[in-house]
Length: 269
Image (cartoon, rainbow, N blue to C red):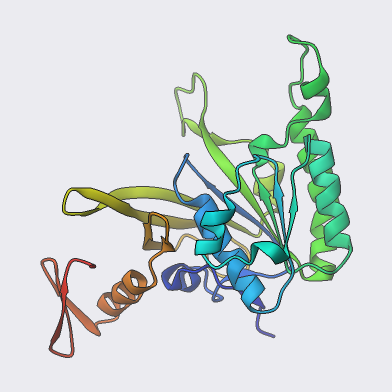
């Protein structure tokens, strides 16, 4: 039977995912450096889940959700279940409870790095809390994963990419929260800004590349590029033009785009 999905807001990414979007009933990890578009991509998925009549919860551990921006991307803020937990345990208990209710289509956790264990918040400076967050994550994910599957709820964990300290070999970048998320996630998306989009001299957005680094529902390692415009989110027109160029409907010569002989214009304006 076909896998039920939530579209991401980028046609190219939906294609790269192989099933047309983010699979339901699974754990998704979206990671990347700061301001790479993680939240933008996630909010588009939230809006799409809501548009399809779904109920969505947003666990805002970062306390950084901008409701005005979310609205611009099509999120129905008034019908979004929003929680701003005080610590990691509380956040994951809320996730567990909401998932088990069976009422949700999508739950977002922003972000893994902000799921700080209670002991670390209340503890003395200098106490060792090594491995505490990783343990918290693996215990919670074990419980949550099976509940997600039963309730057909998708969970998106947003994760900040950090530089590993003192790494000589291998990748100097690391995601927080231990290995559990890597293991339990059905889909892992690595999102990066690759260039700044300009209108004349003004920066108007970013060209963004997403790599599907893990995919348990379709072949992995595909990638997608799209434009994120400041204050507007993923550019639908830009995405359609890209797909057109890729599939040979739209001709690109230098910065000029033509479709069936009609010049669409120069650049993506």
